[in-house]
Every structure is written in structure tokens, then in C-alpha cells.
Image 1 (spheres, rainbow over the protein chains, first blue to last red):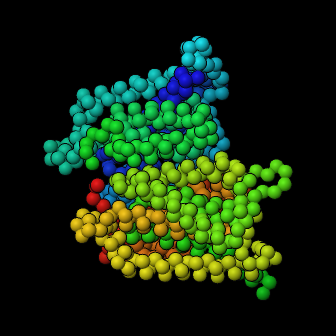
Image 2: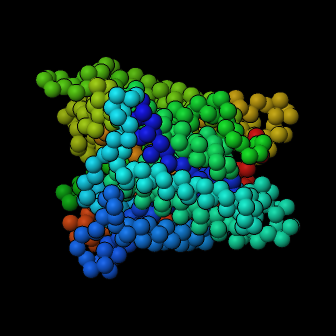
Length: 309
Length: 324
């Protein structure tokens, strides 16, 4: 039982972690809490659904032939990439229309209000376009495989799709970490987050760094949304429901810290999955709030604060 | 005369809602306009007020298959006081955890409490009736009046009186030394602290009073409609109240009231217009388009008219607080 709870927590947590990375990056770079980040997740998931239909039609229609043990074929992977690119465009358009103009004239808190309005508008527009019924990428049924037999710690079962989600999340996180630490573009990004004025003086193109932060954050959000849709179902509220866990994870890890967001995401995921046997599945979402309040009371700068506040 | 009756009935109905929204917007104006506190959980505090008042005044469900087993059946006045106090207490608790920190942490914490209140409303069936909500909440005045024009008109008088009391009280508070300290903290916290004003205590008081006013608005709502359910307190309500305050002009109590009337009128007209234009099969979708329209209105207002219709001209529209 305990192993299963941990495994479920890590699978949910990897989705939260991917979303929280984008949130913490825009948060530290642009200095506002972006409530619209959840909608990048939802739009990413639904755009991938649209592209999936397109790629299936392109491959001659009919059913998608599954790849190996997974429930999906190459079409979903192509749709994941296309959906992520489209979500990045959406983020850039939103920045150009709203956030860029507002940050020129107002304080961070006005940006937060605007993002709250943008989130509701985006979510309801999504519902208008796609309807509110649940949707699925694939109807293929998956059999969970035994990874640990039942007599060791209650046993552990996972579907191949869940393992795929966990593996790809790990690859993305490691890749992003190397990008931020080793490449010039990554260093420029961290420099702007630390001190925008100083970064500008040293010749870094701040506007371009901001654009790339939106692009990276939106891509990770779209992947998180597609993962959530793959192991669960697609609903218009998919992003809204993830928003509180995302914020809890970003604050828990320390705003601006990418490794912190990942560990925070995993902790929130574990807390949610541990909450199910403790307080019941219907209160699962309250676990993220509990983590949030605890960290605000005990260590508001987060576990891995990059800089003193 | 007879064709005038439905119009009058609708007009009173519209105005009752406008004045209830105006009361909630006044609570938000105290928090945001006067103190610079960003509350993303307005709907949660309204829900606490509505549910607390309903539970205090409505007897439990009767008969076999009863879901809700809690309920006191006390007079409506007790419900209003209790609902107001309960929302104020919840606001004080959230404020205690988040107000010492960066301003946007309060936004996230209030967002969280609204989500949790929604969860409790949906799932604590014995207390809240779950998704079915609480029915048969007592209404003031004679039960024979229920649903008639006379009831609407009497309740309108009541909500207008309540609104006037809240407005007068807030105007006095704003002009009092207490209100001046709030503005001082909003404009320059360091200077206020140097004068010996404890910013945290003032913020907490302002946040709790604002939350209590929102709860009062919720209680007014519950006893007008007579039925509340979790879906009445979704984030869209928070968003509506925010749009009302920003359209009217944050920092001005009159602005909050005017904004409430204007945005509620736009909301109603947009809803009716979309119902006319869009075929019945797509009505559910049309409702989401209504929200998109108001979202665009809020964004446009922030971009081109950040002080709102009646916002204070001299003061900055965006209170800045130094990082703490």
C-alpha cells in the first residue's frame, strides 16, 4: 500500500513539477504570480487533442496503432510537440497583448489581477470551443503491470503510460537544468532573474530573455497538461485544478529555483496521494493548501530560496 | 399597468442583486483600495457568510433520506450577524498566515482558501447539503409575499439600507485616524512603521473587516434567493466583484457602488443578448462566452483606464509596497 501511494504521488507530482517550473520561472523573472499559467496547461492539453486528430487523419485515419506497451502511437508524440509549440505562441500573444503593456505602466499586483482575468477568459473560451464533456486521447485500455510483488510493502503496480510520463518528465527536468547551468542563454536567464538592471548593463537582451522564459514555461505547461490528460482525462478545469498545487510547489521550492520547483512538485504530489487514505479522495485538493499554509508559516522563503527576500 | 408589472418586478430583482454586489465590492475596496491587499478568494468569504447564515436560520432537512442534519432555525438577524462574524474570522485566520509575507503570497493563500471552502461545501454533505446545497432558507417578511413584486421591493429597501449603513461606516472609517494610517501604510510602509504604526496589525484588521463585509453580502444573498449551492460561489464571483471595483475605481467607495451597478448591467445585458443570438442548443457554451466578454472588459479597463470611472485622481491606482 505504502509503495503504491508513493508511486502515485510521484506520477501526479511529476506533472505538478513540470507546471511549477514554468510558474517559478515567470514568477522570478517578471515578478508576478501568473494565475493564467494553469490555462497554458489546459490549452496545451486540448491543443494536443486537436493536433492528435489531425495527425491521425494524416496517417490515413482509423485507430491509432499503439507503440509497444503504450496506449498511444507516434501521432500523440507528434501532437505533444505541436501542442507545445502552439501553447508557446499563445503565451507570447498573451504577453504581447497584456502583460508586456501592463508591466510598462503598473506594479506587479496589477499584472496579477490581469492574469486572474486572463485565466477566466482563457478557461471559458476553451470551454466554449471544446465543450465541457470529458475527452480522451485514446480509448485503449491499459493493464497495470506488477513492478513489485504484492508481498513486498503492499506491492506496486503502474501502467506503461504512467512510467512513460515519469521518464519523460525526468528527461525534461534534467535537460532544462543543464540548459540553465551550461548554456549562455540559460545563464542570461538566471542573470535577468537575479538583477535585471545589472543584466541589461552587461549587454543581455532582456526582452528576448523574457520571451524565451514564456516559451519554455508554456512548453513545459503543455507537456504537463498532455501528461495529465494521458493518465487521466481531459476536462476544461484541468488547469484550474492544478493551479493551487503549482503555487504550493513553487513556493515550497523557493520562488525562482527550478530544482526547488521539481522537489516541491513531487512533495505536493506525495502529500495529495497520502491524503487519499487519510482524509478521503474528495478532499485530495486540500492537501496542497495544507502544504502551502505550512510553508508560509514555517519557512516562507521556501526550501531552496535562490536569494534572500 | 399590467404590462408594466413584469418590468417593475425585473427592475427590483436587478437592483437587489446590484446592491448585494455593491456591498461585496465595498468589502473588497477596504482590502484592496484602501489597504492594497490582494484577495483572490472573495467568493470563499461570501460563501462562508451565506452558509453560516443559512445554517443558523434553517432547520435541518426533515423526513426520510434527509442529507443535511445541521441547522438551528434561529431568527434571520442572528444569521446575518453570525455569517458576518464567521467570514471575518476566516479572513483573520488566512490573513494571519499570509499578511506578514510578500503581497502576492496573500493572493495565493486566498485563492487556496476559496478552493478549500468550495471543497467543504461540496463534500461535507451533513453540514452543507453537498452539491444540492441548502434549500428553504427563511426569507424575511410574510411568507405569502414570496416571489412577488412586493417581496422584491421590500427586500430591495432592506439591501439598500444595509448598503447605506456599510457605505456610511466605511466612509467614517476612511476619514478616521485609523483610515489615514491604512493609506499611509499603503503609500509608504517604512515611513508608517517609523511613526510607530504596526503595519501588520492594521492590515489584519482591514482584511478581517473587509472579509466580514463580503460575508454579510453572502448572507443578504442567501435570504433573498432562499437557496444556496456550491456552484453559486465559483471563482467567477470573485472575478465579477473585482471587475466591479476596478471599473468603478479602486479606492473610492462610491466608485465601488457605481462599478457594481454598471458591471452587473453589462453582465445581464450580455447574458440576455447572447441568449437571443445563440441557438438554444449552444446555450451552455454561450454562458462561457459571457465570462470571456467580462474578462476582456477587465483587461481593457486595466490597460486604458486604470483608475476606473470614479477612482481617486491624485493617488496612484496601483499601491506599491516595498518587498518585506
